Length: 225
Image (cartoon, rainbow, N blue to C red; front, side, top):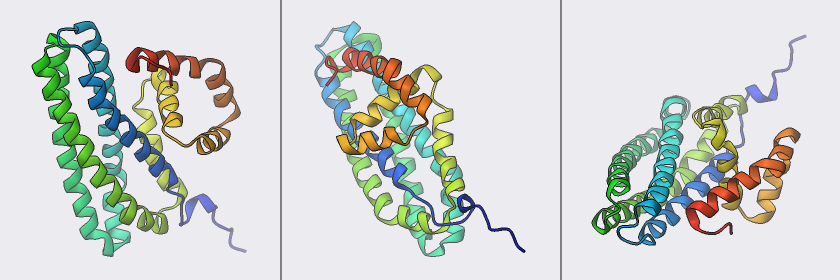
């Protein structure tokens, strides 16, 4: 008698974790221009704190997109040929966002060195451009790509995207990222998300990780809220 396949190895899959990641990036890139503009010209100490935060956020988006480039597009175009044009559009948008992120990184490093009002204004404008491009890209990805991917990927395959993203996060930043994820979600959704995590992760976050996140948020945002 043939063995039943593991449900994790056959389509469909859940892709709601991608929407959660998108919500995080929407939130972070919406906040970033305001944070930059809120720093007084010449305040190099504060500029360094906010610039480091911006560089960490751009690195996270680069990592997120590189996982899709590596693990998603080729397989989706092959398994769902009707998505080929949309996959091409996603690749083009990724390159556009990548170019904008490179400009943001250049401006953030320049501002970190000088704290000047000119460098601050340039960085904020470039962050505005990223936020606008992301709104368009993430919305189109959620509307077209995620339903198609859910139909043709197994859960085990899909989970590799999340594993790729987490593998690139320094261990001492994992709880900080988890805190930002939870803060970007509606309270009920955040509680449900945390409840699905392994018990040891929940305990560590409540005992240690939440304080670590709140301290980081106070340092960057000036508030824990």
